[in-house]
Length: 228
Ligand SMILES: N[C@@H](CCC(=O)N[C@@H](CS)C(=O)NCC(=O)O)C(=O)O
Image: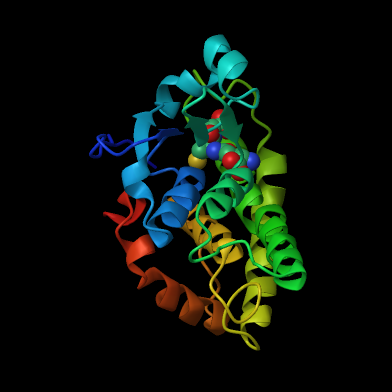
């Protein structure tokens, strides 16, 4: 897998920065959220080259994100916000139209539950598979690998695909009737799965149909990750 590419945009309106890796599945979550909300002009993208290990440098981890991952949002006052869910939540509070994280107690709870489930059962296990059971980011960055653990996580992700398929047999989107942050996380999970050649089982027809539908959204299909 080669996720390398550069990124730039018109910086004149930007009042926030995102430390980014444009084809990365997690940064793509935030990029989709920004596009859904037409907030891209407010953000300047700063490339962090994961293949060079820039995200694991002591200065990056000390200053921007202790966890050594991207994306990280930087506000004008210097505050750093890591974690896709926290960043999406912040963007939603800045500009609630359309909302991706819900606007009633019930929709918020459902979206957060399903978003977490999409991370736990699909996206994060595929990420573990990538880092542990494939060459990942290369020997200079992947300092510890456990192949058996990676393969178990791939199997977990395959069960997750089946779970989301069953869910989508009776509802339009991952958290109910509306497109939300939880859909974006499953899109990222399937993106990462495609990078590492973990296929959606043929039997998962509802998941495949949902995928085709969400991939048609301009916010999704125009992302660098899907640029071929
Ligand atoms: N829980 C984090 C995960 C972020 C993450 O894993 N990002 C990937 C980019 S696709 C990364 O930085 N990977 C580098 C690594 O784990 O070494 C989030 O939701 O933002």
